[in-house]
Image (cartoon, rainbow, N blue to C red):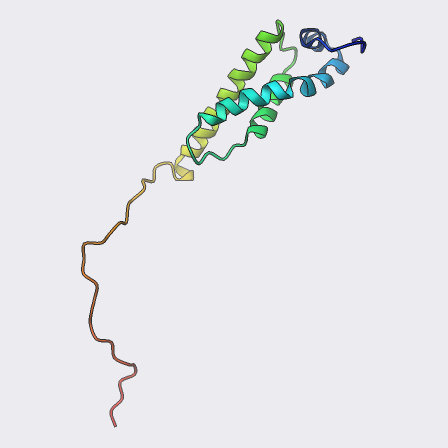
Length: 132
């Protein structure tokens, strides 16, 4: 890959797909901001209380995309479509893990609101009872 002038993302993706190790190293810094925006939009749609962070989602999706042998990207659009799909899969997998029985998925929340029984008002005595 040539290092003159601004980097064309499609060229970097094509070079990485052809096995250029320098191009593969360049991908993450170039793509990071766009991947982060995409992940942020997915994270905003998650239920409250999710534990996965946006940055972790970006990194996990990137590892899935780049970690494969010859993914065969057909340009920028194909890469980001695959990234979006990877992020959705990661979020689905995490939701399933969180809902698993061993993580309390079968447990139901019980409201312990105001009680209907009356409190005990029995007179307390001091212990031990001793008589002179």
